[in-house]
Length: 325
Image (cartoon, rainbow, N blue to C red; front, top):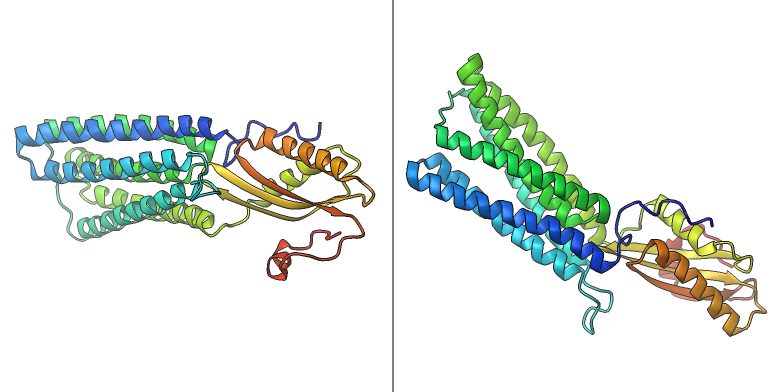
């Protein structure tokens, strides 16, 4: 069959909503669990040590917990079935969460940039107690494990919300690495500028990451078309091996969290009966659902060569150079 390729690829629409919810649920639950562990650990160590630096780190982890809870609820809501008030589903909840995470990551990048510049101008020897270092190592290990889980979830579902949460924890990872580099630089090498250099590099990388997350989320909110490769795959699946299908035109697609919306016109011979046309449309839909089980599909049949132009010109013009009839 011509549609047997790329079945294992991930991305919006490729997993049934229930399966997408399970995969993203594991990642978001792990995110909340890591945040809770770090908040509790830092609170205990701060109480025992009285360290102001640890108090600041505790506040940062509390913010992480709030962000992770937001993503947890967003991905669950996004996978909820359509209802009377939201007939296209709730997928865009993920995009809203992605925008929020992009803002968090951009703020982290700005703070790291400020700290990096300040330490570059006035290098400071970093002092760290054994407790503080132990908390930092714990945070590093847990965050690396979490990022691995989140990366798998993003690869499978293309979740914008989980991708944003991953970027958020990458910012924590970068901050921890900058502090550890500062400790190593000042204690072992005498390079007081090392933490500043690492912080600046991480800040630039986080800024680029925040832009990527924001762009992906805004693309969904603005109903941007799926990539050309996906559109061509959809066209290929729609045509299938059915010789009665003349063409596929006015193809429009968009992603919405774990869902995709696909609609197009199907050019069919004018002498087919309504029953035959319906049978062809159902076969076409089944081929698409086999690859995109979370797709909302609308197919309109046109009698090839005899259909007059119809539909609002405003939207037909946006369909590009597809054959019309």
